[in-house]
Amino acid sequence: MRLSKFLQWFALSGAVVPMVLELMWWLINKSSSWSLNAKICLQKITLVLWPTSYGMLAATSDRVLAIKLFLLTTLGNVVLYTVLGMLLWYGLAKQRVFLVVPIALLSVIWWWLLSLH
Image 1 (cartoon, one colour):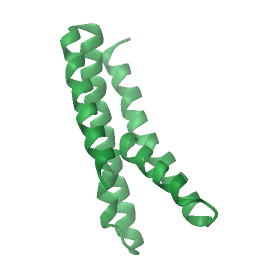
Image 2 (image 1 turned 180 degrees about the horizontal axis):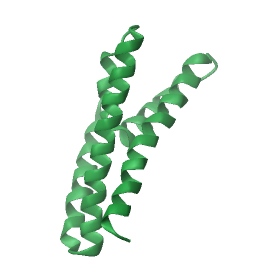
Image 3 (image 1 turned 90 degrees about the vertical axis):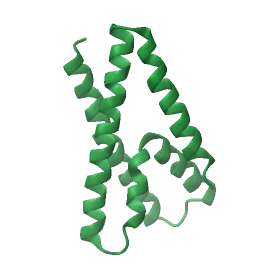
Image 4 (image 1 turned 135 degrees about the vertical axis):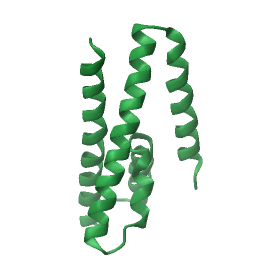
């Protein structure tokens, strides 16, 4: 697979993941029947798959600000996924040593995000 096609898939994933997770959060917040454990589980999944979602914490009841923050954090996620895709492609196609960088980077980010309380 060519680099451009590989990066397109990663960029698309970086855009679709926040949309799906935002929809899931909207559905959960509309219903009061979800347990706290389910919400915590979804929060951890959100942090792992959409690490830039921390930018959404600044959103309050201002709907315009919330939309702007969503678009900004989604763009950040697209950039993050694209960089990760580029490193993975180089690691798979060129030098295996490039695989160390995304694995180490993801491990550190996920450890940090999941250890927050």
